[in-house]
Structure formats: structure tokens, C-alpha cells
Length: 148
Image 1 (cartoon, one colour):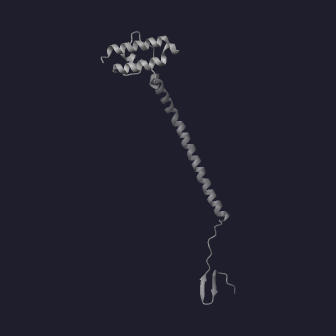
Image 2 (cartoon, rainbow, N blue to C red; image 1 turned 180 degrees about the vertical axis):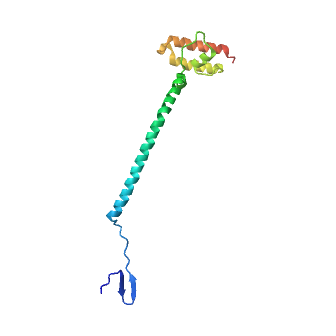
Image 3 (tube, helix red, strand yellow; image 1 turned 45 degrees about the vertical axis):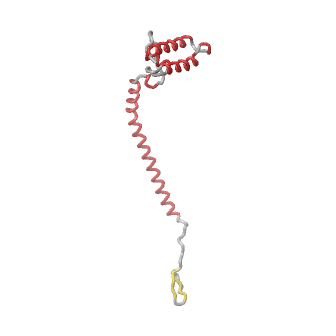
């Protein structure tokens, strides 16, 4: 009788042969795992599609509301520059905006700001005579109103 089991007879001792597990997977096991992966990927793509569709449907009213809100806002809210021309009679606010200083600045700050601005806008250096006149007017107005 042939010994078909994994147990060998060696004298009086019996022992089971040790067979390491095979690292080679069968084709059916690979097919099952691949099928599960494909199903998971397909469900993820479908979920992303439905989420995107919902987001686009939700975006349409939100986009309209957002664009209406932006249209209602003044355009000067998005600019760091002063919008508008010069007043007929220069005010302290306008003078401080021209020189880029606080309306409550002292004489030394007014003088430094005037010098810095005139260097950039002097007519001899290609600047406008009108702007130079406005810069000088702003300096005179702030010098007259500051005490020290």
C-alpha cells in the first residue's frame, strides 16, 4: 500500500512534512480580487459623478446670487487706488491722500512725503506740471494746518 498522506513513517517516529505555503496564487483567486477592485473603482467613479452633478446643480443658483452681490458692491472696494478726480477746493483729506500720509501728520512727515512725491513727479524729470502743482498745493495746505 502506498503512502499518500503527508505523514512519513521513519522507524517509530512519525512526523508531518512541512510544506511552506505557496506564494503563487491561483487564477481564480486573482480573478476574484481583480473583480472586487474593479467594482470598488466603478462605485467610486459613479459616486464622484453623482457628487459632481449635484454640485453643478447647486452652483447655478449660488453663482447667480454671487454675481448679483458682486454687481451691487462698489468698484472702489476692489482697488487700492483712490478713484475720482480732484476737488475744486483742496481739503485736508485730499491733501493727505495726494502725499500718502495721515491727515494728522506733523510738519517733518509732510516735508518728507512732499520731497519723496515730487522726486517721482517733477516736471523736469518727465512728470506732469498739473500734478506737481497739486502736490505743492497739498503740502502748503497741510503745512498751514499743522502746528509743529
